[in-house]
Length: 175
Image (tube, rainbow, N blue to C red; front, side, top):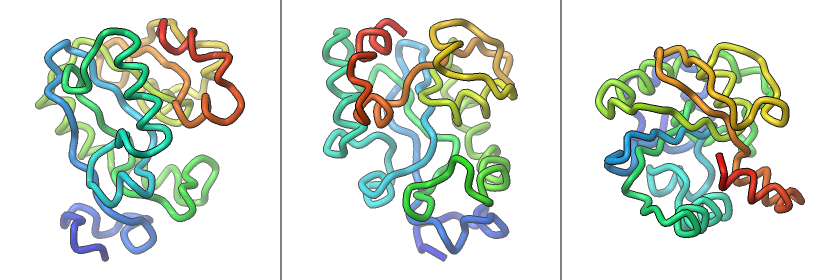
């Protein structure tokens, strides 16, 4: 097991398969917690989510600037705290088990940050936060109740936008 992983990772389906372990980023002064899916290569290396020097994190950083925000205004975290093999969580045999195993880590971050609203980036995070298997394309921008009884809004994940969906950037900025 990766030396950066806490003892809570023991027994997780990704304990031996996943790389790194994230800690939350940002101060959350604006009351918004941005929750993504899982760590990527740069995130696993830096132990922080959505790194500005990674592709998806760089786009998120640009989005913050375009909206007049600073990264530190938000609490930023993921539903899974390590990098899954080949960066694949959705549809993987370990998806549900890894999300369930990491849930206590997310619980602690939500309890400490006390956000007023959650922004779920991507369908996997949206499903985990709402407990409902709903399409981001059909439900993004709407307010739902989360498993934490905190309002949650779903939006497109920056990695999705980068995969031939940049025409939806304005929609994501609105969210």
